[in-house]
Image (cartoon, rainbow, N blue to C red):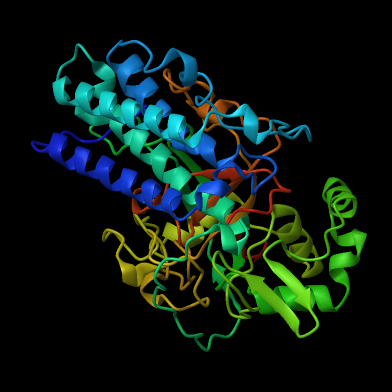
Length: 443
């Protein structure tokens, strides 16, 4: 476990961050028409209304109970909103809309829990060893990142919601397609450092980011750009998408049983392929990165005679340098800025690959932070020295089950604080809803 480095202004700075994170999720809920709050756009997840209560319940349980030793915010509803879902055995939730409290009751509970959190924080000290989990605002960092993770995954849910059930916000600036040529670049052998050091004074990190692990990576070649929709379309047109020889057996069984014939974000019409963005359907943008499941990405890589990168290969290509010194980010050690990539809620949609050359790595690899998470072939497992969060023991450990794969990078809807190089995302291989892209390697 680690905590943010102490500063003189830690309280106002971190409370401002909390307010900004709340504004991000509040905005998302406002996009949903009230009648749609009881919809379940992703079958594996709770209904949307759950998350209105869950975010505030999580904050109160974390800060009020774990940090300050206070009681429950509301005994009747705390348990209902405490935990999300990540089914791994094919079992889907079966609750009905009528099983949930009314919107009015949920919002009243949510507002009350938020007020209680704010009142507790006004009295709490971030520099008193009597409350070690609040030192330097530690649990506030956890609450903020938890909320911002949901700000992204809630977008995945809204993506699946019918257009008429959403309020369309003002359009954001679109980026024109750039003229880039697919290719690979040679990455010389060298060290890749995963994870981070634990201890007060080091940057904040989640439990699965500890401890640091140095890995020697042999030379390899990697795609300069993410595989685009246009490239993935060739995979479909030539019939390889329907050829079981390119698929792992479990992935083919999933594809066949669900009658999947193309990526989830695509649809075939009489006029050709279209892409479903969060607010509209558009002709398939051939230069956008292909958002696909790990199963689909792996099949494409086999078709090309390549593979997905390991987590260590991704690190070497992203933050390594020819001189052997590692960077904080692909572009260097400067903090993330808009010219470095499509992240931090700049856009609802991906941009054409290669449109943020300011974010290229020392080896010239593009779009490593933003525009789409990147699948690796590394199973999500603990790093040496892993210790569970004492206040959230299942945060990572529940998913060290051999059924989840590591993703690196970021998507357009990933908050800036999660662009640190040690951050690890993870999903199941047949989960198609994430803003997840990929690139291939040759060993």
